[in-house]
Length: 104
Figure 1 (cartoon, one colour):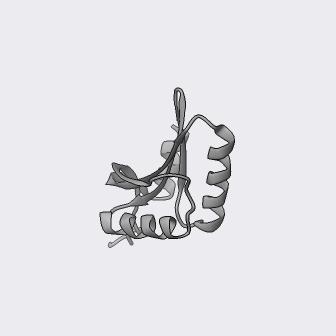
Figure 2 (cartoon, rainbow, N blue to C red):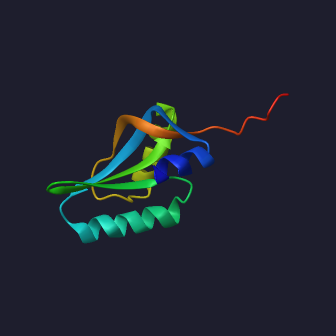
């Protein structure tokens, strides 16, 4: 319930979009190191670390358009941020809406 209230206060909703799948590993230290680098170099994008036995999956972003995800993917590949391939995966993402002014 708390997460729901926080999302409401920040005017966040979910919708269809894309995330970048950056890493699937069972090496927790590798996942934490990559997560830390991503948070430092790309503070405008959220990083998601999901544990699905026996793997840790690292995903990034809330992209509403595939082209935007493609652009960030190319940027990450260019700077060789991840040790393997990067995949664009369709997911429910967080969509932020501008607060609507009351029209009375």
